Length: 325
Ligand code: NAD
Ligand code: WQD
Image (cartoon, rainbow, N blue to C red):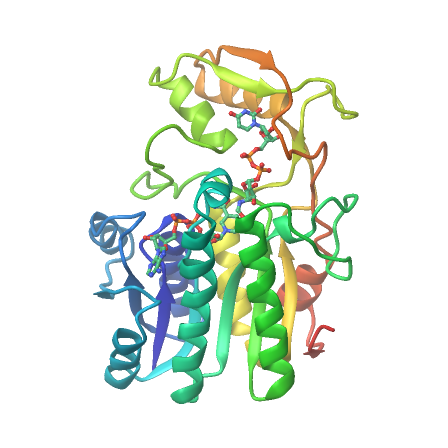
């Protein structure tokens, strides 16, 4: 049986492909992996890197998940058992400049994928959601809290979650894990795959890394007057390999989920911007020049997960879970 991974040449997708091949094989469940990606934010070079790390090949199809005919042909060609759906655009700022692009790519792309899955009776899905759906709730954030969004990117994640919940309510054959990622960082220890954003990075860690190697002159720290340990913003940074392993666990535990379940993937710990900068400096032995600038519009002081549900569902128990409301 095959596992379809949309967006599998991207940052989180590529690490997940590696972990599925390494971990799932050791637990006796081998998957034939089929990646579909339109390469809008990644490159096929990643495929060679994955092979170098795992000694296994994957099937790659260059296609847009919004393309119904291409997706249908793919499902006719391969015996797909489950899907992990990473494909999507993710730049918060750009989503306000090009909202239609984001609603089309993320929301229409997901609806197209779901229609094809339904047609082919493939009803197991792991979806990349985001902690952004918690809006301005107070941390620690847990899955029972209300959801809202403050930008088009966040709206697309929220809309997709609603679509998934409605779909799962309409047909109890669906098993969907809606994984709400906190802040993924880092790279595979081989150094062969990682995050390589085009242009100036939006996120903290790739920015810090580019300052460390001298590609950017200095980091701008957005605000030091928050009510936090040192006044700078606090986030829940989760290593991308841990996040990838969370997907393996979700896949292995999909049978426990009847319907659609939202699950946080975070560490449960908050770290400030200056703590990140100082730790990076200490470990890399590189100077990270920075200056404090005003707060970034839309930023919250503190965002971190309550990770109990992931521990319960993905790590510990045999408990069964049913649809969220
Ligand atoms: P990424 O851009 O590295 O990976 C996404 C991949 O999807 C890319 O390879 C891109 O080429 C592909 N893609 C985009 N639109 C497509 C389409 N229509 N058809 C086929 N392929 C398409 O991003 P990532 O950081 O790996 O994120 C993966 C998923 O996780 C995204 O859905 C993102 O919204 C979500 N997410 C990311 C973060 C984060 O901070 N990185 C946090 C929360 C959620
Ligand atoms: C982290 C902290 C900044 C850059 C974003 C998306 C979210 C999710 C993850 C997809 C904050 C500070 C940052 C810089 C800084 N993505 N910072 N200087 O904003 O928590 O979340 O990525 O779903 O939807 O909004 O992550 O890495 O941008 O910022 O001081 O140059 O670093 O203010 O406190 P964020 P981030």
